[in-house]
Length: 168
Length: 207
Image (tube, rainbow over all chains, first blue to last red; front, top):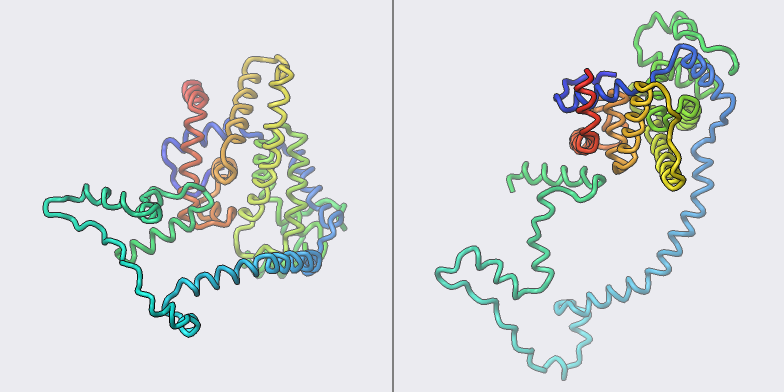
């Protein structure tokens, strides 16, 4: 079987190997397969798609409900945590007692060391050494070399294409 | 209705439908009739692709009897899903996608069987004429290498090398973009070539 596009030499070699070792059906075999194909509609009763939906929908709904039920307390908890960590949230500001509000703020953390004159791009990595793990992860270059899974190819190609189009 | 022998397309269809010409409307009508339970219409639809289905199945299971059963199972699945096929798109890709997934199951079985045979330490094939034995060994080696590939790479390799499909058709068959299909085929063939290096070299010398 020949694809409708020209192929490279390496691919042609593999193609020749696969052609040479392929099992081609004989005439009687093809006739038998055609006869079997004609039998398929009588043997197989197709199920309408809505019937499979009817079968799966209650189970799926129950599973989703159970998941929501399990996750909702933790979601609420994390949302409340997020609100509490946000100093500008109006509801929180209103609830803070006055005494607590008057407590002086903790001294600011020392700023990252300023690059001295003569320090080069090599020092950039050293600067990141002082930061936390998330900062190091943020500059990981692994994604530029392609996805680790074949299934992620689509997303990776889309992302690289969009970056190239925007000139980023 | 269903047990009768499939007739050629020109006989299976009304003369008017054939005279209208557009292949799309013919295919559309065949699909509609097959969905209504017309066995001849379904056979007319799949007949041009039976060789390709058989080749993929035989590649995966290595036995003609098993391959025939596998094709029949693939046709059964194809009929069950026929309402998802849109006439005008590639029926070859639609059928090949089902066939390579069936092949995946067969190759998994092949891998399990090979492990059992290694444990039992029995010869895989009875001794026979040298050339036949060599060819069978080559087929077994190809099956072994195919079964060791990741699922998607194995699928695209078989679609490219056994079904002879274009990148566009492969993309449709595996539900991906053409760009991804190209990359996957490239990776799959590269891996195949690395693992089948000695077999490819032998084939070149013989040819």
